[in-house]
Length: 216
Image 1 (tube, rainbow, N blue to C red):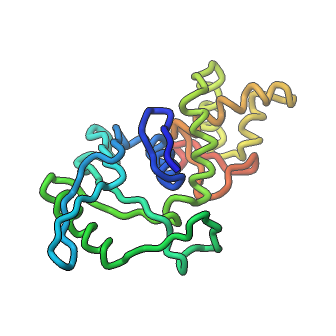
Image 2 (image 1 turned 45 degrees about the vertical axis):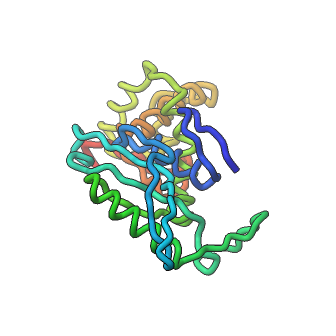
């Protein structure tokens, strides 16, 4: 499968598409490039081949969590069949040449080091987690929903209480279902902007605990 992400980046598999979703949500990521470079590598017989890693990630250098963090050259791969958390039905069963990949990835690591970058391989199990499901949902709030007049008061209410469930938090400004339908998008946007603390490694529900940054 191939396709184009909303930012115009080309992806060659649904796993890559999911990885791009994580990058778009990661506030420390300044930009990323799909299929950024070609790397030469030698096979066991000494024959030269070229290999194209999947993505190069650049980080913001003016944020505490990413200051001095070098660019990251990435390869995204399906799980080994024996490592998959549950059997995955594929139109074409995935087969991996471990020896060949070891040579390619060693060459990619050398190339990255020469550029002052790092290199890493991400497996399907690293990408497709409960966190990804939350990110897919929150990305709409990050990229589509605009700031609203509810947000400052929501932050104030949460700061007063320290922590509330998402349902309780929305309820501080809305007592009816109709009113909550207007307030909840502002709650989700604040979560997406990481203005509040929520455990996104767990499924995001109305019973999820939301904490003020000052109480985190």
